[in-house]
Image 1 (cartoon, rainbow over the protein chains, first blue to last red):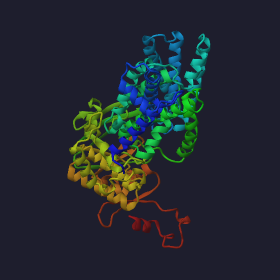
Image 2: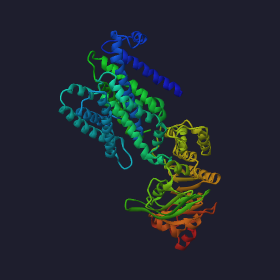
Image 3: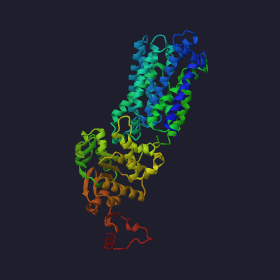
Image 4: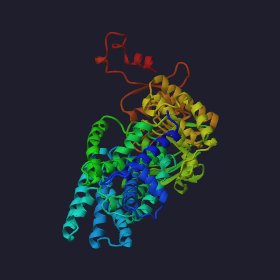
Length: 335
Length: 282
């Protein structure tokens, strides 16, 4: 058994590695020594490398990093909250709800300033919270939320939200190509604005989830035992749902719908390091960021100079994993 | 202590429990018996504050249950649930430590006192050799002891258990209830335990409460309650009550088959007169 600090060291090294990879690759490859040189010279420098790094690569990489962190962390929280191994912001429809909210805000006033940018996550948040409650009540059988009905309800609600989103996008003039690629999970908006607009929401959401590891542990024993252990169950669940949905919504607002990160990463963490949510939440956040950075680096290089939406890569990796998981949860209890 | 006065509980208009009054004193083990579907679990859920009351009152150490905060309630009353759907990959220590939840903040940072309490609970329940094991790999008896240890870690004056011996074999049933008595006597716990087995009840309970069709049919020491006139209408069919040859407590025996269908090969008294049978059974 590895010690906790060793595990965090591994996760942080992985994150640092994928971060550097994401900054380095793209239409122009920037080697590590050039990167260092740019930082040595300072922000004021004006050569090609430094403007690519500071205006394009680093903002994009940071956006992908916080998006992955939000998806990984909220995936772990949804799985713990619903005691359901298949819960993922994408599969339970939260992401589609968020994108509906975001597109609604965009079609009302396609973003043209930082203030407009800040409004998009709020609209996405409303969409995601609406979806998660709808799916939860549709999927509930008695007092439990079985994995399969949750996925079915998620698919149904998510298709509905996606149709509405498409309708809104077709109505709005121009920008269609950009919107489609956004929906497929390509962080196509450049610069620091999307980072600044989503970071506060993601920090708030993930901050609450990071502090809730113990609470999520208690919830694994079911509502009634959690109640008997002194938890105010309904209030606790509401706080967790709001926090996870806020992080998801902010991530979706500027990076589009990216599936399966919130499914794969918490599972890998659980398999490698156990089911203690005090560790699972932070490690899923770090792991989600690393996985999305790697997937994004791949998306920008395999068909270079064309950039694939990163959602395609995560779905190609995630869908088979999901099917494997679906088969294995049929026979064993979750835990 | 636990005091229940004229309690009614139900879902919507349909009352499941009607006019229940009973109390459990410190150091006492009260068994709750009755056929399946008669309201034992409902009563336990009402006492633990999961179900709202339709009438009457439940007082935990003097405080009305509705007036207690979640944390205060969990510092007064601990519940040992039936062992089903436990998260398999939790390790034993981690699971028992969750019993300290009502004493910890939202972050759940446990201090030395919490760890000491958990270690003591593990020693008392003989789960200390299981510390690093996962719940999923334990036997039913071990899982039940882990849940008991978690309840003890809550250090409450009142302990409630929902059919804790259900999944245990005979010798583990005895040792679990023996442990329960020891804790009640040593720690002065007020214990209410739902049981299925009448003979275990008779051996291990100070008093027994009989629940039938949502009402309390009888309450008292097993010698008073376990008589054929009380039990037969509740459990249907003919039960026989004899005296335990060693302890002198009542033993409840099921009725045998109709004589014409009884096994012929090993001493069933097929031809015996009714009088003789009476003599032999009672």
